[in-house]
Image 1 (cartoon, rainbow, N blue to C red):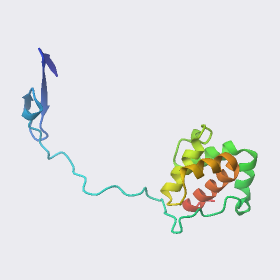
Image 2 (tube, one colour):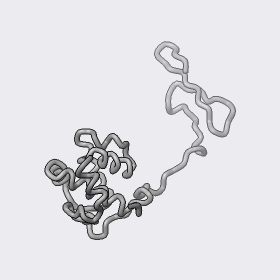
Image 3 (tube, rainbow, N blue to C red):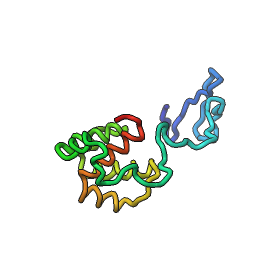
Length: 148
């Protein structure tokens, strides 16, 4: 790219031509569209994500007895379980200890799994019942990914 006075001289190479096409305005460009691909279908959901047919979580907030190991880690070291949940969900593990990180993760998880609720409900649940919610999120991820 050269600058001459108030004009910029661009050198554009078409995909199927070794000769450069020169111009000072975009309407002079002769760019081949053969190398460009056209998107004809919107991308779908990420592979492996299953939508909840009932619109509900797979377990209740206070059903820690469903998985005693997760319950124990969630009550003794909720930060470690939060990092595990973030990592298992495919996010950076430090999201589990970032302020508001687990609330954002719960909201994203709820929306991507097709679970009913509101952002306000997510924030209040994480604020007042955070340990139980982290345990429920871990159970939900394990259930949907098939690992326990």
